[in-house]
Structures are given as structure tokens and as C-alpha cells.
Length: 116
Image (tube, rainbow, N blue to C red):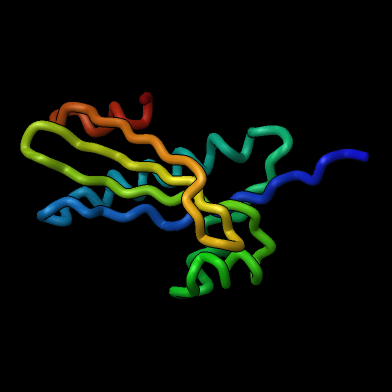
């Protein structure tokens, strides 16, 4: 018997920089990651649109409504000399963070985040 194919939903990435001026970086990274994940064999992806159309439901409620096993969420933060991105993998049913990672690039190259 084949193992069930996991279902991943991408939550909107947030700009948590002090000036709130990196929303465009958050949106671009979210879109780029979603695009890359669509090509991963053995993974079903719920679109950002299907998730954002559900309003502000908590992750566990979204998981039940959309039949999602895991969510990915991200946040972008800028400082004077660098831009950082934190990504978290969250178990949908319990909202438990099961993995995370971060990337930091010089603030004069925020597009470099997409290549990291």
C-alpha cells in the first residue's frame, strides 16, 4: 500500500521589518517558493489563494477545512545591513512547529534571497 501523499499549504509570508517596507520581498518569496513546490513529486500543494480566501482562521481550523497536513509560513525582517527570512513548517492539526530554517543576505541584494 502506498503512503499517503502529504498536503502542504502556504500561509501568507509576513513583513516584520521595523519600517514594514519589505512586503514586496515577502510576497515575491512566497510566490517563488510556491512555484518551486508545485514541481515536487509526491506533494500536494494548496494554493495561497485557497488559504487567503479563508480569512483569518487559525492553522488547525484551516487544516481541517482544506485537508492540509502541514503549512509553511515565512517572515521577512530587514535591518540596516541585511535582510533575513525565517521559514517554519507547521503540523496542521496541532499547529506545532516541526521544522524551521533561516537565510540572511546583505540588504543591498534582497533578490539574492530567492537563490538561497
